[in-house]
Length: 211
Image 1 (spheres, rainbow, N blue to C red):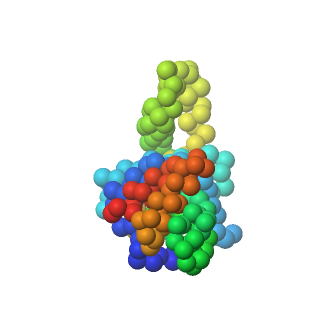
Image 2: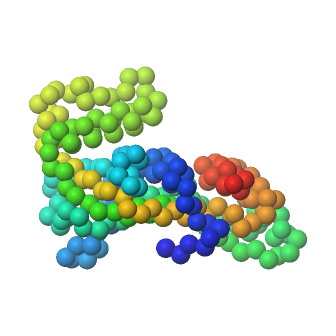
Image 3: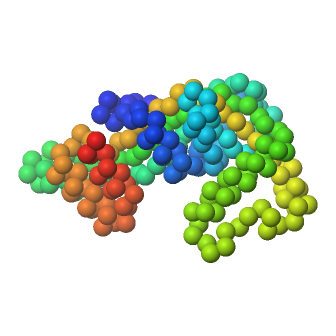
């Protein structure tokens, strides 16, 4: 990934925060048939291993299970807020006419080693934690829990999935948020993004322009 210094994000807390806020990762591995990508919600265990551990599950019917060998390298990409930035939003454009369109975004690349965890206890615990986490964010008066369904049904569903664990050995973050622009230009762009309903990207730009 091309990574100019002013867009590089190396702080683990910032990288972990994005991974937790946008947990749907794109997991890429090299198989005998070429590159394969799967889109999977992950749990991040930041305190485990040297750089953290990612856990997820996939369908037992997924051919990926036959292609994974323990310890093989894997890349998981987490995408945060992103959007088009018009040069018309920069006050300096109207003074100098020396601005061009761009695209702002936040992304984290997690490199690591993968292994399958095909045991019911691991999968049950993972599903329970993921469910509690995401149901708590769904703002329901009565969040769904595993005990809402019969034990037999949950056991049947768990038997149809396999766990995956990835020990992270390197995190690479790129937060391209107009850090190379003046405060006035950042303010102009964030105001336009807010007006378009893209407040997540606007807030990220504001937060990082003050770093």
